[in-house]
Each structure stands twice: as C-alpha cells, then as structure tokens.
Image (spheres, rainbow, N blue to C red):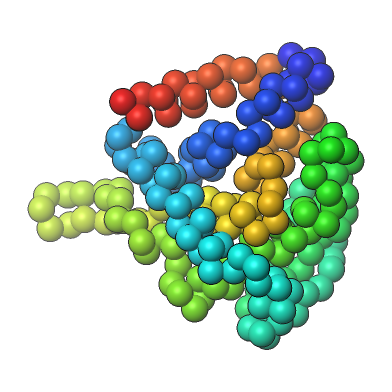
Length: 214
C-alpha cells in the first residue's frame, strides 16, 4: 500500500479511540489469556478511568500541578520514537521525537504545544499512580497458569495503565486522538510491509469491537 492512501486511512480513523486502545491492549503479554469477551471490558474501563482522572485537572495549570508534586521537567535525547520518560522526581521530554511527529502529520492536525502538553500529561499520569495506586490494580488479575485448584499464577494487565494515560493526555491537551495513534502513524510511514497490512488490521479490530458491542 502506498503511503498517501495509508496516511489518509489512518487520519480518517484517528479519533476512534476504541481502535487504538484495543491495539494497545493487544501488545500486552497477558492479552492471549484474556477471554474474547473480556478484552474490550479492560480497554473500555481504562479509557474511562483516564477520562475520570483528567476531569480532576480540567481548568488546572498542568505545569503548576507538576511542580507542586516536586517533578522537574527536563529535555533529553531518548531516540527517534520515545517521546518522554518518567522517573521518580522528573519527567524528560524528547523534543526531537515530538518535532518528528509534527513534521509527519498535516499542519492542521495538532500543534507542537498540544503535543508537548499531552506528553507531559501522559508522564504526569504515571506520577499520579504513585499517589492513587496503579491503574492495573483496578482490574481483575488474569490467570496465566494453573495446576489443579491450588497452584495458580496470575498477572496484571499492564497495558491498561498506558491506555488510561493516553486518554488522560488526550483530554488535558485537547488532542484529536489518543497519543498512541502517533506510534502507529510513524510505523506506517516508515514500514511498507506494515502499510500493506493496515487495512486488514483496522478492519479486523473494527469487526471485533462491533461484535463486542452486540
């Protein structure tokens, strides 16, 4: 698939949070252990939690909220794709990656300021998890191994943390899409092999989501 048709397809689906949340969930190692009817429950629940947390900060100066928690904003080169990194006490912004996203997308799609705010908000969300508790604890653990009724091993679905953080960032920066969309957009831009499978991938996810709603 040529880049221009792939680009238009992606942009036409950018605002469909359900697609990108589900694709994020698919990256979790625990995903194959989730029953088909459970998968959208986790993704939808994470989106809702992200929106709820964002509501607490609507109208609040984000940078002031970050500063009040003792977080220091710095810049650094984290490679071409990683937009930011959170560590206790600091958030590092990778301006090179943000600029690459803005250059790849149509000029009307978003501003650099929106993207930077969303990036800070995403990492701030993970700082808030240290206060409020990790989002994955809000969802049932998944059984990944079982031997008889006693020996059971479970794991948390960590992808819900990222989905919630993406929704939190989208809300606070008034983005047109979940930030995870940028990762898929850049992958399609750089990989002809991925572009060729893009229509089928999106179609399959749309069918899964349609079936989950019935």
